[in-house]
Image 1 (cartoon, one colour):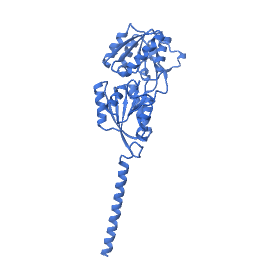
Image 2 (cartoon, rainbow, N blue to C red; image 1 turned 90 degrees about the vertical axis):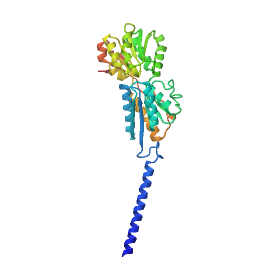
Image 3 (tube, rainbow, N blue to C red; image 1 turned 135 degrees about the vertical axis):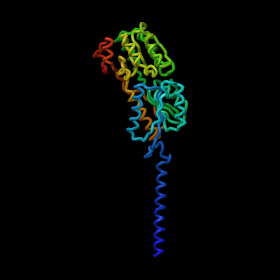
Image 4 (cartoon, rainbow, N blue to C red; image 1 turned 30 degrees about the vertical axis):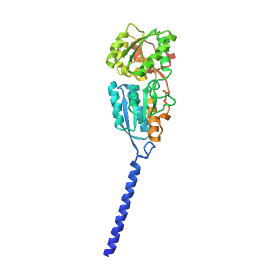
Length: 334
């Protein structure tokens, strides 16, 4: 009887030992790095987010990015950093994200993307809210980005020409005022694009460069009596202080044309724009391909906004005595 009990005990131990070995092998397979970047079940990812400043358009782009990640079913933790329009902090954030060994960096704005690219040539970077990725030296070309960076642009090729034509033909603008940040490369590109079109429209420009959002209101006031309208492009520094420009323009019945639909909702008269949520979502789809499918950023062409919408703010139009015409085919905000 004692021998039988001993044999049973030995057999039971053997079964338990085999079961334990089996569990350990399964854990190593599921949590190891072999599936990373290839859509392995249960894979967890860390995405570092760097954004130059708080304003509605950039925030909407981030919401779109997160929605694309959610729709793809990825398990993601975000490490979110905002530079509050400080370029030195912007650089520090990029370096910190690289040192924390995130799986991908989402760079929301041109300065954010430039700092991230300077910080790493290994971690994949997906940007959005960038005006010209080639001029910003983020990619070799839109078709063939090269290296570890790709993303979506916030510059539809017809937005600036259509905006200037609208000002000239519908608002009789002869001189347009522009306020922009001298430290944002994306803004310099747009200002040059405006200048290249003015001669053909028989229009002039008065420009004021600012170094921070604190200077925006004074810049707007300095344009009074010199311009027939103010045109605010997709400049992060100026848009973060848009309310001050709206106040100056509306109080002086001066048309304020803006570069994004969120800025129309926030008081601008009109814009040819698109939803920043959409370009953020498209950037998120790129991130999914990189993380889940193992696609390299170099093999994902940079994308432009897909839809251009003309929107007019009725409340602002009424405030400055502008009649919204049916032939404008505009979406009306408020």
